[in-house]
Amino acid sequence: MGSSVKRLAFGALLFACSCAPLTYSEEGAVDFQTYASVRVTVTSSSTGSDAASYLASELAKSSGFATVTLDPAVTVDAVLAVTLKVDFSTTVDDQGNTVERYDATADYALTAGASRVDSGQATATESSDLAAAESALDGVVTHYVAPYRL
Amino acid sequence: MARVSSGKLLRLGLLAGCLWLTPREAQAAEDLPVLNEDAAPESAAPATDAPSEATGDAAPEATPKSCPGCRHALGAQALWVAGKFIPEVTLRYDPNRWFWVDMELGLIFLLDPPPGDDRVVLGSPLAAHFVFVPYRSRRVDLGVGAGADLHLLYGVGKGIAEVALAVKAIGHVWVTPRLGLFGSARVYPVATDGLSLGEKRDGSRGLPVLFATGVEWGVP
Picture 1 (cartoon, rainbow over the protein chains, first blue to last red):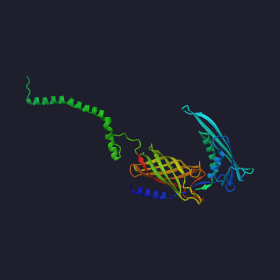
Picture 2 (cartoon, rainbow over the protein chains, first blue to last red):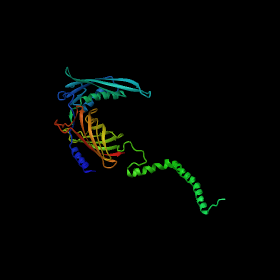
Picture 3 (cartoon, chains in turn green, cyan):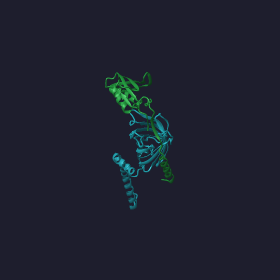
Picture 4 (cartoon, chains in turn blue, green):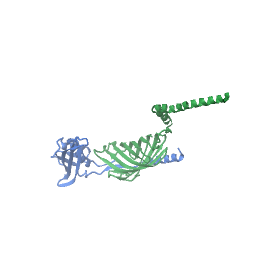
């Protein structure tokens, strides 16, 4: 190896030791200080599972809400209302086989008193009713993920 | 009646002998290739492969390779990121003199988590880059490329991912025909809001160039 190549490699190595900052961040969909507690209600056409319990559980794990409840008697800062719809359809693939497909749509709205704070829609397509419903609800949880800066 | 001397007889005898022998020698010489043709499928390949394996060079009889410097490669690299350790497995698909495709898959370890945060693994970076290679030699490859860098942050939350358009320069030095060292520098001209190269956690600015160095095993 020539001395110029060695010098180049050494310079590249030194330069490579300059570590770049790389930051992952999420500001939060809403102000979680203001809306620290939330009640979850789900209106669902899915027959697979208890969608409200699943959503509340997932929000409690990774959302920015400090308190998540299903209890209507508890006083909360906001109410997250979700309308979950799952549509079944079949398609025929290239081999002539019938493929079942479930399209789920979760329309959500966060309200505080009479005012709407935030709203949106999450969709998912899966091969079963339960998977489609949970994937769409996961989209809602991702939207309300706790703020981070890592 | 003509008289024939013994010397002439001897010369005639030698000539006749040569005329008799020559077709048979020629026939024998023609027969050999036939024998060789029969044996060729079994004997020719080892005869040409043996020196190739021993020396690492192509045998003169072998069909010339379209891209002698091209090597598919499997390697490992580390991305030089402040506060994180990002080891990756790399794969290079190198079908052509002028370009190759790099693929990367790794893990993102958080070395200095914020207070109250106990996360260690944030997720996985996944990348694919198309690299144009203007310079190749037996020892050195230099290229520039572009592609997508996907950061799957499953350690932060389900379904969270950030993506960036990556533009990179890359150089490889082959220490042996199969063992290489490489380094790259990339920038993210376009990225999703949650991915900031060159921005520290406190918001201050740093070097917006991401370096990586690694080692790889090439398959010529």
